[in-house]
Image (cartoon, rainbow, N blue to C red; front, side, top):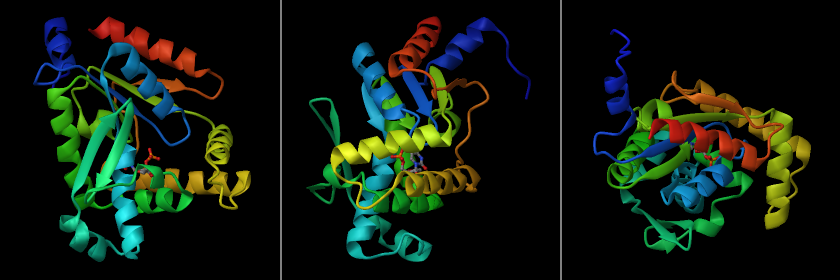
Length: 241
Ligand code: DC
């Protein structure tokens, strides 16, 4: 395919088919995606969608049911019995699994692991992909995840890919878990090891691996404040809309 450099065509390309504005923020965990995406959404009055929470909500179901995330056959077999809903209340995204709000159960190391494992399965990704695209067709969104710019919203108005050194990310995650009282015996070293393991799995899976889109703005957040990263993204967005 020829690369199209016609500015009119590019402008058309930057807006999704439905005319909504979408900002894709991808990257591994601990780069500050969630805080930054949420804050940008607030400033622009867009809807913030945390797609990781969708994988985590499914993971909660499997963990509670005692189905090992590694058992692909069982995970896929039980997928149709999960009804997944998302509600936004006072700026917080709530995940509802079969009528129960599981939002407070999403951020443990056990769920992080299970979510990363089940996110490798095609059937799981397809199920969530449909939900994610549908939201972006009807609302202006800031969506954070791993494959938003590459797979979910390839026509996103702006794609940002955030990175940070693994040690910095482990420290951020440690502080986050500590503040939530959810360290559960985890140490900085064990968190760093888990992060590296998940990064490897997320970036090497066959379907929709974690990687920047060709046209993504790449930002290393290691030595930047949230405000500085946000300013870069908002500046890039201004240029596109
Ligand atoms: O962003 P997070 O740590 O809450 O995401 C949890 C897991 O879900 C992560 O290990 C990879 C997976 N994920 C994904 O595969 N694609 C997304 N768009 C978002 C998350």
